[in-house]
Length: 388
Image (cartoon, rainbow, N blue to C red):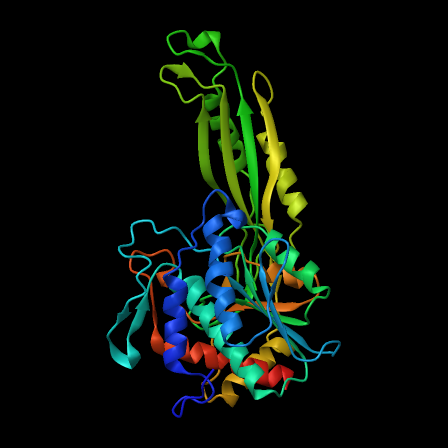
């Protein structure tokens, strides 16, 4: 990347252009998840060509995730920046893929779907990686990945990335908009899927059937009576249990329903046993005859926590000071992403990046240019501090 006389090794104009380029290539979540063609093509037709244009080595793993590795191998220091390709669907957002540069103070904003959540941070991390490669001072391994996930709620893509790398980096950043704050901990999550089956009948003779909706009501009452507040975390408070989906079949009028599927979102604190949380729900959901109930352990993400004085946090703070950007604020996230998977495998990992969290999934999603540029320099500062 061409060095800017006003902003050091990161070219502001190029960074904005990259961000617009990413936003203008749709990669929304669909029922196909990581195999959604638009997500796969976003990496193969948008990100990969740009990475090759700027001279970074890149490859793709069996799931289609993009992997860039630079710096010496086999050192005692390694850092992974894990970005995401998949975004929230366009929903009601007008011109979600226009990538307009909206005028305003400090350079204005770039607008578009996924820009405050995934794609702004992706551009910033790529700019920092390119700048670090150009400086040629790395004494450790730097890995930048673009995961085919982003909205899936599971670790499949992260697992594929680590398997393809052949090692677990010592420190990691989940590259996503956090309003510039560093997550000291985040909750995990397991989706528990409960299926209630009865017997279909015409609704004029309900006694001839077994109404799965009535069974589902009983399941809902019993499951929601579970007390999940027994353990408290100083930053994350208590776990939560939330019903998030109810569907019934057959989809026909005047019919006693013979199947209802409920999904419960059970949030986990660091140290919680996900199997114990699942089993508690399964026991409560077992309402017995005349219904048949099955319970499934669904998509899952680990919780994680990093020490505020650990290697990663010290490097982040020192790197920001090195780039004269001040110490970043910290927070605790009730959301779940791949920091938990990295953490359970021995990588000290957090969520951190430019992009206002209040803009996620909004109808006017945007990122401030100043935040975008500062975010790239914050990532670069971390790389310099930890790997040089």
